[in-house]
Length: 273
Image 1 (cartoon, rainbow, N blue to C red):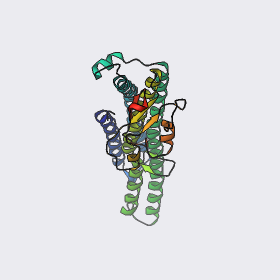
Image 2: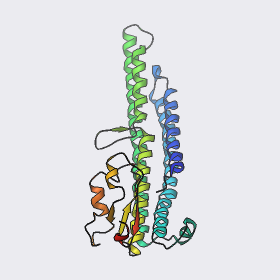
Image 3: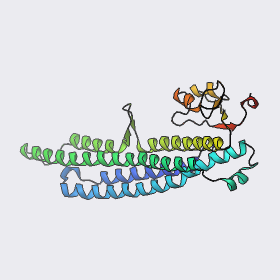
Image 4: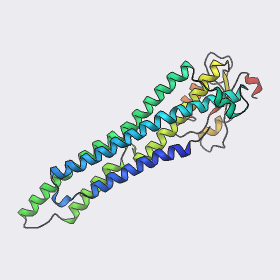
């Protein structure tokens, strides 16, 4: 399966750049005398950064998810002998109804996942900035009562740490793991692209009467290794004792997040052994 490394790296770089710009905006805040007005100015700029990132990521998804589906169809056309080269297959690519619906759903799902990252960053940063305003006011009041002129360095350091931490967490998953925005984006786009590629392969293969496939090999070192080279059924209606794609995936051993495996469709499983 194509790795789409260049495309994914470009999107990840956009998230890294946005995170860096947000951090610089937070670092410019004068925490020793932070007012609500100054905080709102910073938050407005951060909102603009995230809105621009959302537009960029939406355009990326709209271009690259269909490209992954086309890659799966090309894979199928070559495997089934409909085309001899990638160039010939590309000229024949056309989304059938199943693939058109699948691509539309994949675009929506991926955009929702990426939007969740920026929404979480926005929510956490807003909370941290407003907390910093309150902490600054309290610390300044306490300093005045105690006869000090400025907030203590320890308090300012902790305020900076809290603000930085707010940007570092792009998402918290169901297992409670905290993901940096760029790491989560890399994982989710890789996974969605692979799933789209595989589903397009399945849909095109079934439409052309091919109900079986053999799983690819790339010398995996994790649980995937036991599945390399195995035959699967692309639909439960196909005869034979081979596991279905869904059954294989349900084991959690293959087609996990970041998994690189795909499969090559075939009409006759006896020719795959």
